[in-house]
Length: 168
Image (tube, rainbow, N blue to C red; front, top):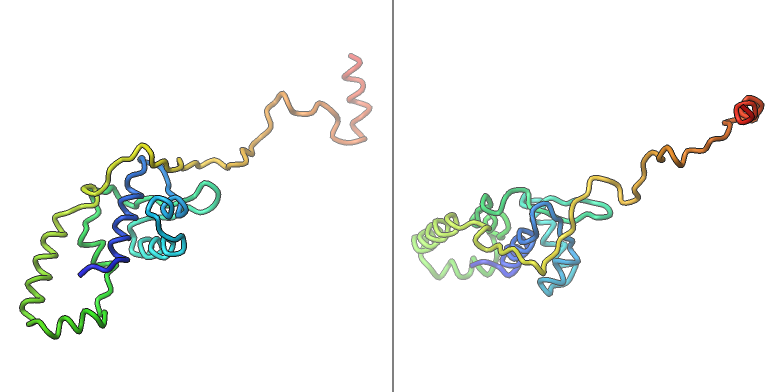
């Protein structure tokens, strides 16, 4: 009923949620943790970002983090947002079952998955280290401290008055 891509997307959400609060997780780290190719992880992360479950921080020190607390992410919402409704394989199976059975199965699945949240699948892992989000630049640029400010004239025209100050 649930595709492999959707089940991997749930694992990706759980992996991102297992990082400490305020940490971001890179797609490289997700690829290593879930033993999946980087391109496939990026495809899943793109779908999760479009669906609104994760947010991307770009640039050095960037990565992904959940948009909401794991306890507020409903598993039915995740699966229904990511699952492809019109798969040819599913339509072939559906033709062999009565419509009332499909409706009953879907209702039961929806009830069960609506009662589950991502928090039930998230386990804080001390081995899993995300990167802290940092609002400051990685280059540490800013005003120079007063001790490093040069004590010289700004132009040739100020050289005479600067020399008088030094002699005094």
